[in-house]
Image 1 (cartoon, helix red, strand yellow):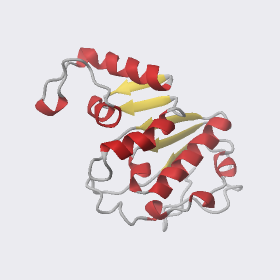
Image 2 (cartoon, rainbow, N blue to C red):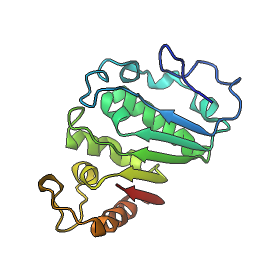
Image 3 (cartoon, rainbow, N blue to C red):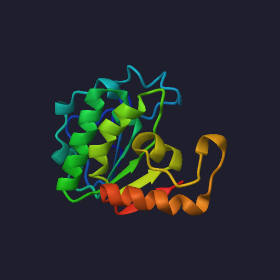
Image 4 (cartoon, rainbow, N blue to C red):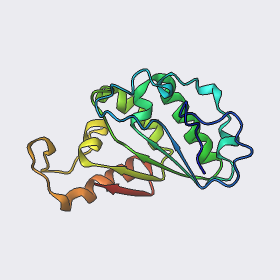
Length: 173
């Protein structure tokens, strides 16, 4: 079931008639990787209090967000946090694609914002570079920037992320 309006890309005000929902994806589907279409987008101007997350998520089993959405603005970050908290409270599986974009925010701001969100995540999709950029977690002897990658050590990154945040399942890509 689609949970957004084609014009605004925002959830409709009343979702009581939607029916059974299995999956809710929160965020933007902007086309430019450099943030040009993301800045000033509807999601970047979102009012965190505008959503009745309990109603929106009712009947869903899974809630997914990416690290791009909270990077767009403080209000988008707050709305993402509100949604993830409601999803956890309702017993949904919460997943996140860390997806760090340095053109959208600094490493320090990403860490400050994503740390509390990670404590709500059950399933994490991330690459080693993003784990390092945002949380300073990397595999020993690996330098992604110079191309020195040891795929066998990805389990170290996953184990450290799991230990730090209590995430149930982690896919390092």
